[in-house]
Image 1: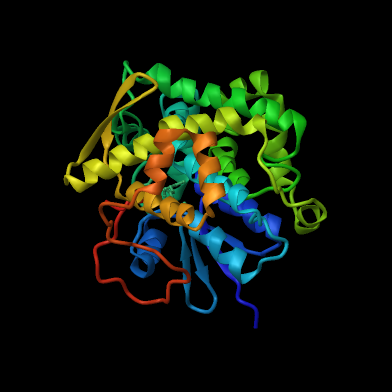
Image 2: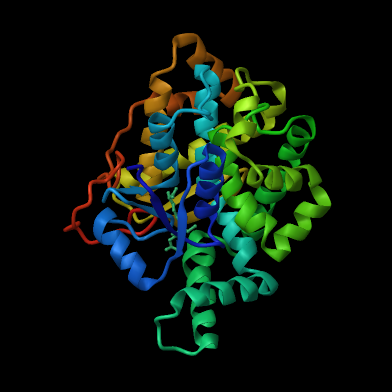
Length: 364
Ligand SMILES: N[C@@H](CCC(=O)N[C@@H](CS)C(=O)NCC(=O)O)C(=O)O
């Protein structure tokens, strides 16, 4: 019998939206269950991590981490493939997915939680996940606003000095995406790839749906707005009918430059701080000093990117030096100096009770 999939997730969640778009593109049916404290205990008992989405499979196995889940299904059910065949295009697709997953998280959380109109709306929505908690609605809403700001806004380095730069990250992203989606339906070409699903996480559930950033998107980037809707209205026959992107073009240059100059050096700084066993990392991004918690998960992300980079042929690796810059090339081509204890590395996870204390989404 075919395996069926139960997604423990949320209608307001970045990574649940990313995963849903992918499952829709592939025609993989799934049921959704709204997460809550009890379901998180149930999931983390099997997977060792408290986060959404988590997928409970009817054969007793588990899938977790949107990037690993996409990789898993691309091997299990390759058609219609979203994984580019050309090695350089594939690497860039994975790199852009990772960038959007991790680097756009902070502006997405900032726009959601720093502005009262968005915070009021989403805290009400999230409060409904706490049905089993015996507290009045206003207290549940207040809890979410307090918790999300503490952990993901102020706790992630956003303050008076970095506020502007956090918002510029979103505005600059719209600026580079708009000409791309004006000229073609997906990031790398005619068919969506990992890069599109990565960008869909922040762009859909936060920037398109939350009132404050959504107003900005509608005004400044109607082609991005249209791409979000296109990504949701996707199905396997549409994917199948379009050619797989097989080359990189200059429209991507500003995005690749940003990834090469800002994101990869940040990952390298995180890795260095992790190696020194520090709890916070300090670095500069576009001349702005940042200080934020070290996220072991992102050390693992860098090691994963290096593993993909290592498989590139010499000319393909060299072409990355041109697209991403010298510093980025140096980071990608060097060896990881430290290993993060892997919480999840291969899927599917065989169902077994985890003895380790569960970690959070940053693997802390
Ligand atoms: N790397 C994970 C990240 C999942 C993640 O961070 N999900 C968020 C919600 S969109 C979460 O559960 N955060 C945990 C928290 O709020 O503590 C993935 O790709 O699935």
